[in-house]
Amino acid sequence: MFRRKPLHLQLIGAAALLTALSFFMFPVIWMFLTSFKTQDQIFSVPPVLIPPAEQWNLDNYIAILTQNNGLQGVRDTALVASVTAFISVSIGALAAYSLARFRFGGDEFSFWIISTRMFPPVASAVPLFLLFRQLGILDTHWVLIIANSVFNVPFAVWLLKGFIEDLPVELEEAALIEGATFFGAFRRITLPLIAPGLVTAFLFTFVFTWNEFMFALLMTRRAVRPMTVVISSLAGGHTILWAQIAAAGMITILPGVLVVVFLHRYLVRGLTMGALKS
Image (cartoon, rainbow, N blue to C red; front, side, top):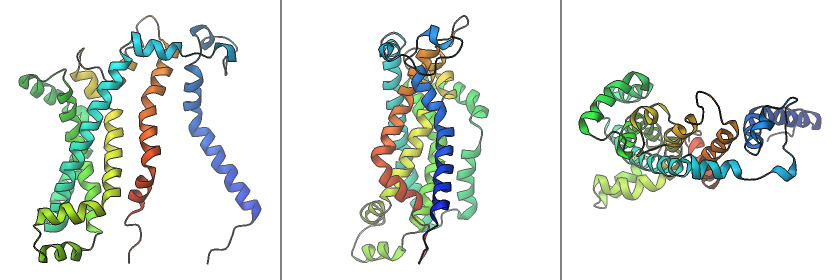
């Protein structure tokens, strides 16, 4: 039985959590308020914390979406992130099942896979650029999908391998006795049971790709303009459009927040799955 904490300890804990939440949320709140300011208000002294109510409008958001390739940025980023996450989870689930059930390559091979995720992407930027130039796929969606998948697949393999190892192997053996193939047992038994893990891996790889900047800057020009590149283009040599940068930042973080809000139940189950052992 867990004893309830005294009231004063509960209040102290709530105050500490509220303080931490305010500290970490302050940059987001400041960016949200800045997205409704004018350029003069941003540089005013003393600073304007909250714009006057009558001046709240969507001018900065409209300017981003209509004048600064923001709409294209959202579309391109969403496409690249979604396809990359799908590919990473699909390949990762198959590889993780092989490593967990057949002990293919041993623990050394599993460590080698996750070690590729530790490899700094900047060290591979130039070789990948030269390779993709030879293939003629620079400034396309596929160049970003392939580049991001290279680094996200190892993460998905490492994450899903733990989920599969936590499942009783007897469930799959029973399916095999009933006449199912290994792939049939994987598709009908394993995948439904690790659904929280699949959603967790998808969310992480989606967010990693959505926020990626280096490959997007190096390997795209005009045909493809991810949102991270659009934001960087707002900081020019003579002027920095802070209000539009704040608006673009809010647009950029919104999809990730919505995905987590709608799928948080699976995310929590996925992160806690396997924490208790029978």
